[in-house]
Image 1 (cartoon, rainbow, N blue to C red):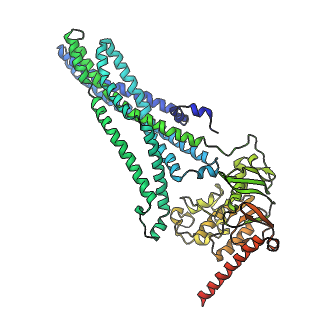
Image 2: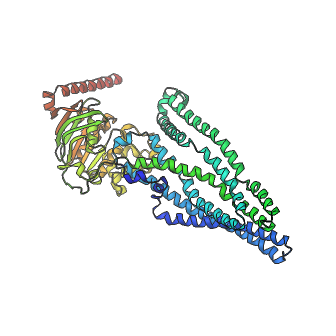
Image 3: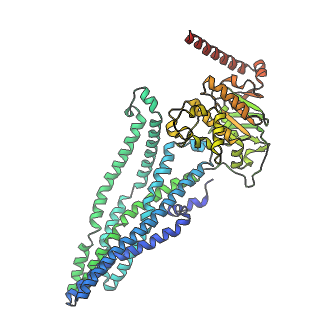
Length: 591
C-alpha cells in the first residue's frame, strides 16, 4: 500500500532520501559554490577601488599592481572553487541516481509479475534510464548553485541598501522582470510534460518492439515506415517537443534580454541621485560594478525554474512505482524442510478474468507431476503461482505443508528452480548465464551442469567456449540450445523443487531424448512439476493433471487417464497422429 507519508512528502525531499552517505558531500558542494560566487565579486570590488583611487589621484604603483593581482586571484579562486563544487555535486548526483535505480530494481523483484507486465518495457526504460538521468542536472547544479546564487546577491543587496535603497532596488529590477517572464513560460508545462512522458514511453516501447521484431520485418520486406505504431509514436514526440519549444522561445528571448540589462536601470537612477547629491560618484561606480557582478548569479535563476520543474515531474513518477503493492511478506516467516507441493481450492484471475477455478492437488516430495491441457487451460499460470510470481485470489499454495505466503520470498526462491518456455539470456558470457543458478559456483561446477544438460557439445563449437558473450551467441543458438542453458541453470541451483514450464518445447527429438534422460537422472529425489505439450515425455509421471478451462478435468497416471479421461484420450490421439505424420515425412524424405 502507498505510504501516507510519501503522499505528503515534497518531491525535493523525496529525491534527497536517496543521497544516503553523500549528503555531506552535497553540503560541501553548496559551501564551495557559495565561496565561488563570493570570490567572483572580488574582481569587481578590486576594479571599483582601483577606479576610486584613480579618480582621487591617490593611485600608487603598489595599488596599481596589488589590485589587479587581487582581481586575478579572485577570478582564479572562483573557477577553482566552482570546479571542486561541481565535482562534489556530480559525485553526489550520480550516487543518488544509482540509489534510485537500485531501489527501483529491488522494488521490481518484490512485486508480482502482474504488476510488472501491466507496464510496457518502454515505460520502465523511460523511468529507470531517461527520467533518472534527467535528475543529474538539477542535483549537480541547481542545489549548490541556487544556494550560492541566492545568498551572494542577498549580501550585495544588503550592502547596497547601506548606500541607498533606490540603488539597491534598481539593481534587481532587471533580474525580477527577467525571472517573472521566464516563470510565465512554465505555465502549462505540467500537462505538456505529462503528454511528452507518455509519448516518449510509447516511442521507447515501439523502438524495442521494432528491434525485437527485425527478423519478421526483414522476412516480409517491410520497413520502419510500415509500422504505423512506430512511425506515429516518433512523430508524436517530435510534434510535442516542437510545440513546446515554439511556446518557450519568446519567453526565453525576452528573459535573456532583460536579465543582463541591470545598467539600464542602475545608471539613470544613479545619475538622478548624484544630481540630488544623495550618493557620491564613487558610490555610483561601486553600485554599477556590483550590479554587474551579480548579473551572472541572477541569470542562473532561470535555470532553477527548469531544474525544479524536472524534480517535480520525475520524483512523483519514481515514487508511484516505489509505492506499488509488493507481494506481502509475513513479519515472522515460517520455515520448512519439506518439498511436497499442494494446492487447496486455488482461484486466480488476471483482473476480472478468472483463469484458475478451484484447483486442488498434491505433488509429493520426490514425485513427478505433469500438467497437460489445451492452450489457455491454465498450466503455466499454475506453475507461476507455485513460484509465487502472483498471489492466489482464493485458496492456498503450500510447500512442505506451509502456505507460501508465510515463507520469506528468499526462502521460497531457494527451494524452487523454475525453467520457463521463454528462456532469456543476459548480455554476459554463457558461463555466467549458467552461473545465475548458483552465483558462487566454480567453473568446474558450471561446466558439469552444462554437460548434464547437454550444453557442452554446442558450447564447444564457439572459439571462446564458455566465455562466449551471450549477446552474440544468442542469435546463433537455437531455441532448444537456449532451453538447455536454462535447464543447466536449474541443475546448478539444485533446488528440491523443479518446475519445467514446457522447457523442452523447442528441443529436437535427438536432443530431447538426451535432455530427458539428464532431467530424469538429476531430478531424482526432487519434486518435479512438468508442463509438457509432448505427452510422450510425461508418460511415466507419478500423476498427470489434465486441465481444461482452469479446472482439473482429470487426475491420474498415464494408463488411468487413457482409460477414464476423454479429454486426455483426445490429446493422446492427437499426439500419436502428429508423431505418425512426422515419421511418414521422414520416410518420404529418405526415399
